[in-house]
Image 1: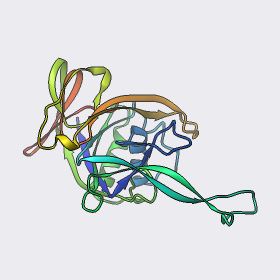
Image 2 (image 1 turned 90 degrees about the vertical axis):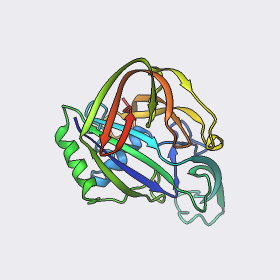
Image 3 (image 1 turned 60 degrees about the vertical axis):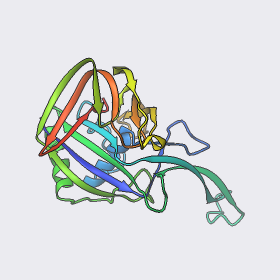
Image 4 (image 1 turned 45 degrees about the horizontal axis):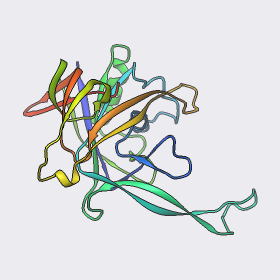
Length: 256
């Protein structure tokens, strides 16, 4: 089995929560559906056309936070559009709360994630196409972190050829990615020098959309992760993937 990873980095990120229709809340990490969109844009697929092609049964996707992140609310000054004849918002503006993911220091820090991609037996050819596009940096559309104006850069593309599947039975593991909540029985959390910026969060993230272009969620992932970019120390049951490349090692779980 082969896995490739890439780092995606930008100044700000926003991954809108599916249940927020009045206030724009954001997830701290990109959901699986957002990662699908990043990959689809990179290889030039039409919007909403890839839900079945990149579903959990056809492509394995994982995510890790590489730098400490925080959330903060900002007010966006939108045009107030009233009626069909007023498309310039001449009447007035409306301020809308908007939650943003950023580094700890807005001026100097950035938001950085590592995305893991692996094939399934049903979709190996599509995986190879995606891997080659990222290895050669031949992106059709520019990568972003959630919204079109939060542009991002892709770096550090690695192909992990040495991959072992470790079957854990309630064993202690240091995860470098998110962990599936249902498989975790215990969490270890020790105070360190980075303790101030490191918290453990749990999120319920959309994983797959129904292939009808209506963005209808058909599968969710409940995951645990650290916001400080540090490993997640847990007691876990299930499959953990050990990736090795030169002197680098990563222990991850996919968003399955």
